[in-house]
Image (tube, rainbow, N blue to C red):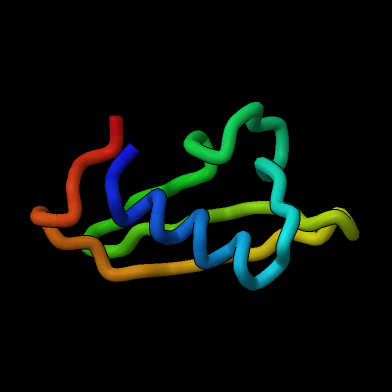
Amino acid sequence: MSELERKMILQATKRHKKIYPCSNRDELSACFTRHEDMIFFWYNTEDKSTHLLTAEFRDQDGVME
């Protein structure tokens, strides 16, 4: 997991306290999507609603494992 992904998970946790993987994913690390220079983090909250965080991705931010 890249540093940027860890930061996005931390940001989501600060915002919503408890977060869960979205859809049929088993881990938060599986909830990231990349498109061009953007990274998207999809997650659910206790009320079962889905949320999205986005960030601009740069090569120095790391690579998803």
